[in-house]
Length: 203
Image 1 (cartoon, one colour):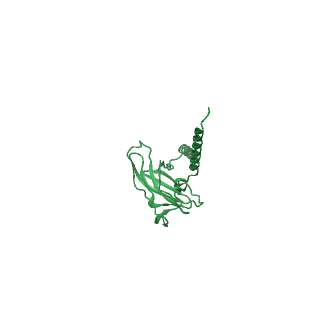
Image 2 (cartoon, one colour):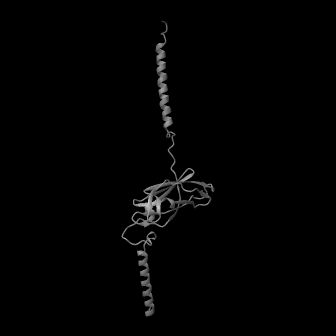
């Protein structure tokens, strides 16, 4: 089949446009670096800079952030909300933060390294839906990058049950056998002493 010059020109132009678009996608900066001047600094992705997890502890949920070295979170930018149906989550209780005069927001309380917050919750669905909470938080790198607000929906995990003080299986039976053996030895000793104490017949 012979293609016309017009067809070949169209295919060549389409291939060139696709190549340029692919190069733009590969070279595009991630969303947290949009608008930040390129200065050769490598910044962590948000999920690596601020690793978050949540656990259920009785009637409250504990949310924890592990913050990478050289990064910090703003205290007043941290919020929690219910995401799953028929769930009520109270405001998050957070500890005091370190005072910092921030280049972006002025005087702020911030967290370094690690922070935990607690929020009471009520489930009205009797466990019919998987529990989900929505977290909003914002932080910066000390090297000069302020991340946009981060919104993440997570599933809190159950807190591991505390070790039970009840003896391990088999322990009680073993102690019973030991005590029974000791009682048998004691009874045998008493019987032996009593036999020696009795007078001999005919004396």
